[in-house]
Each structure stands twice: as C-alpha cells, then as structure tokens.
Image 1 (cartoon, helix red, strand yellow):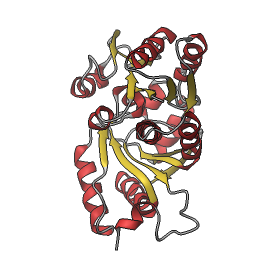
Image 2 (tube, one colour):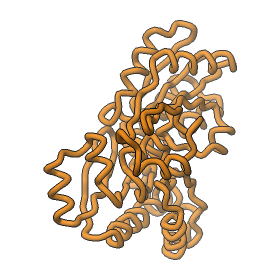
Image 3 (tube, helix red, strand yellow):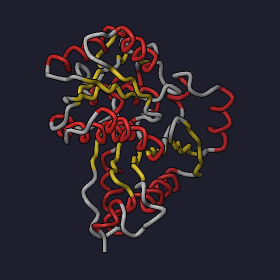
Length: 296
C-alpha cells in the first residue's frame, strides 16, 4: 500500500531528505510589512532576516486554510497515495493542526489521519522522516501508525534564544515577563517534548551555547536521528558541530537546516536548536543503541 506523509513548513526538513521520501510540505504564511508570503516558497531566508527588524507592523504568521491541506492531499493521491498521515506542529503552539483536522474530516478521496507531532522545527521533522521511511519501506498503515505513536514521546527540541523581543512582539510573552527577563539579562532556553514545553535559563549567550552543547553531548550518542536548526547563525552551527565532533569521535554528519521564517518570526535571529529522537532501547542497552553503535 502506498502511504504518503503531509507536513507543514515548520518541520524544517532539509530539501534533499524530502526529495527522497514520500513527503509533501504545505507552507504557512509569513506577513512582512503587511504583505503575505508563502513560507519558503516566495520568501527567501535572506530577505526575511533583512526585513524582519524593520517590518511594520511586526511580522506575523497565518495558518494555511483547510482547502490548502486538501490540495496537498489531492497531490498525494494523484501520486498514487492510498493513505495519508498528516503530521504537524504541536497544537499547543499553532492553530495549524485545527485546520488539518478540518481538512481531514472533509476529505473523502482516500483516508487521511491527522497527527499532532507535539513538537516543532526539526523535532517535528524527525517524526515525519521516521514515518516516511517506514512508508517507503512498504510498512502497513498500522505499522506506520505505530512508528509515529512510539516516536512522538521520544522526540525532543532544545533551543537557546538570543533575544526575547520577538516572543513579546508576537504575543508569546507578556510585557511583564519580557521586562523581568530583560532586567535580569538572562537567556531563555526552550525544551519541547510530547506536547509540553519547558524553559530553562542561562546568564549569558556563551553559557546558553554551552548548555545546548552539553545537552547535545548527553543525548545525541543515544539518538536514532538528530539534527540542528538555527536562525541566521551559521557560524554558531559550525562551532557546535566542531565541538561535538571533538567530544564524540566518529559522530555522523548531522542534518542541518535554517529555521523556517514561519518560526523565525517568533524566535528571532540567533536561535540554535538541537533536535533528536531518543532510542527506545536506550534505558535497556545504553551503550549499544542509537548512534552509540557507531562510536568507540
């Protein structure tokens, strides 16, 4: 049975990975200077980050309509899909999943199963990749569903933010919270797993970077898949990978992608995120699971 995975542009999956798997991406909208753009379609990251600081009104995002998801489902069906799993950014962070559920209820051509990933950025994307790999291998609908359901609780995003201004501008942080964080000079670190977000803090940018590095070192050796996303800070990505390879000899090359503008609107430039799927067997055989099998 041919199974396709539909996702949204916040999943931050590298294009070369998308090209090799049964994945279709639906773009969100990004509004800059009052003009609406299709995320990653008619808005380049370069243009986005050049325009973001001066956008009037403040840049914002909009969810695709149910009709746009239906168009993606039609595209999958035209390509031979007999079943679709529609996997998307956590409903705790975006209204996107509400639109997906509406589209799935309306769609009658082939079965569509809407899935809330409980995550964002490449952590969401890693769940999509696992599902698409299972579909490409010819797994059944129940087997692909099992892969998705078992992967979601084991998938993490851990991101430092260089600025909180965009969280406030986008309504994700109150003025009081913004004032307290600004006065203290702390740098927030966001951790997302299984529909739940938590915040840690670091006193400086350098200490925030070190926390991301340490978290990666502690978790990536036991991961099934991992990747790095960033918001316009390629030099920090290079430094992170360099130090990871020094600390974890034999580490495979990570997937890397820049955060999509639809997320960049809210996190602002400077964010750096490690994303991973923890091995299911990590607690049973920690030295033999995940990427650890390639390491000395």
